[in-house]
Image 1 (tube, protein in one colour):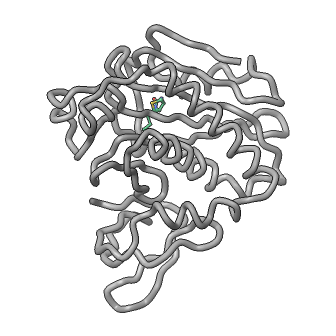
Image 2 (cartoon, helix red, strand yellow; image 1 turned 60 degrees about the vertical axis):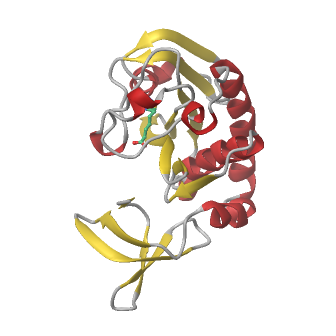
Length: 239
Ligand code: BTN
């Protein structure tokens, strides 16, 4: 099922409020031409100009037995975006845990939220992908951002990309829920930046170190300046 809005506050907010309408055994897709209150991680604003970009929320239900995979769900959506952009001729990378970058600038971000639905957990998985956003607008964003237009000089049909992403993500989500994260591990490790000196924000402090490796569960190993390796399940790389 798909719900599309010409304008909405946020596709994630709408999905969270309306999930009782959604079928329990399939993915519901909520999209909009524009968002008046698009949200990013850490309560940031997500720029959502009309008809230029993708603002989409995939919503579905998971039983308690699959809660161990919750952290991998946004990673698999990020990989789906990467797969699609690679097929389109771009050279995307992943900034752990699930930002998609081209030329070290953010082209797509993912906001994963959850809400209880009886004995199940409703996943509200939003993705914003900058498609035809022009340079003038990208320059007003307070961190390095890009779009497919800015990288290639070409404009793209937003609806076609939504449909391709929907297909790719549905396939990948089925694999994740059946087989776990292991089928994605090599690809995830391939696309994530490693061996890069960074500052990392987690547990209310900034850690300095080098991105060391990705564990089998998708968590991050950071090599601290002391040489010690520390594992993180969440956080934000500051670059
Ligand atoms: C981030 O990188 O901070 C996450 C950005 C997520 C933006 C998308 S756009 C569709 C969905 N609705 C929202 O309000 N946010 C997500």
